[in-house]
Length: 329
Image 1 (cartoon, rainbow, N blue to C red):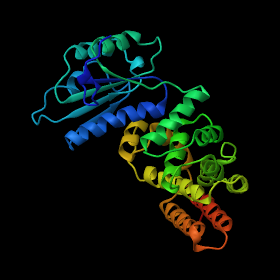
Image 2 (image 1 turned 135 degrees about the horizontal axis):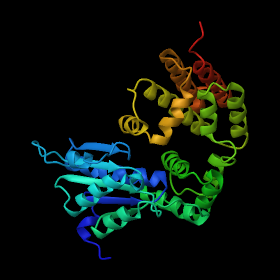
Image 3 (image 1 turned 90 degrees about the vertical axis):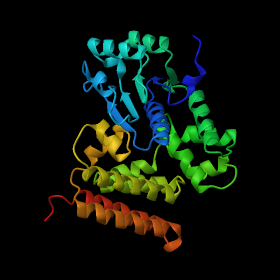
Image 4 (image 1 turned 180 degrees about the horizontal axis):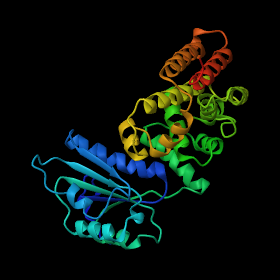
């Protein structure tokens, strides 16, 4: 099918993100939202699941506004829309509204294929978001992440990172970002080995997850294994900080659906569900105490103390204790 070059812009009237890789789907949405807000800082973003997009809802969201505001309407899991709502979407595709960008996230399978075909026929800008099940695909993804961040990494370094991290694209992307932030010059296999040897078995995020869940013994065991296999202490303090901050952000947020909270807090919906499970037992005082413990550990591993491992152990114990603060007298 011929493509309209104008529709290669993130501000094309309709963007179709096809696939089942959550990281890539989220990035497709973020790209459109960022472009819209660059054009108009007051852009209104509506992020909807199939249950929220009932017949007639799309017409309401895309009706002309007195203030002519720019709007982005995101429809997740579009393959699960009801038949009547699919009719509404197909009708809209034939005459999209000005100043409005519709983003359809579709799994790409047989379910809802009529909507997929209709969006393509209408000339929607398409973004591929396939699950990366093959090691070669994850390797290409890793190389692309380094290129996007403007840094060089040897082929051996990229392969070592994929071998260490495994199949989780979010963790691969996070690892690339961390290496780029911490390491100057070309990133080689020795650097990856220093940071991520044993990473698949004992991730810094595993240490953080066990700590914020209040599972002291398991967190300490994961910490000691991480240190023994060469995971950099700074990665562990970073993961601990992220874990505690996520607890604090979600505990102070308004209630709502994961998609709504994700938009408000800047977290992906899958993380909202995980943090909700982890935050039982936490109090505001517990969050404050845990953040202080992380700050002290961070100073300890960056030269402020003689024993980085001891600094991390103290932090893990303090965080796990804070995770059980609710209900203690």
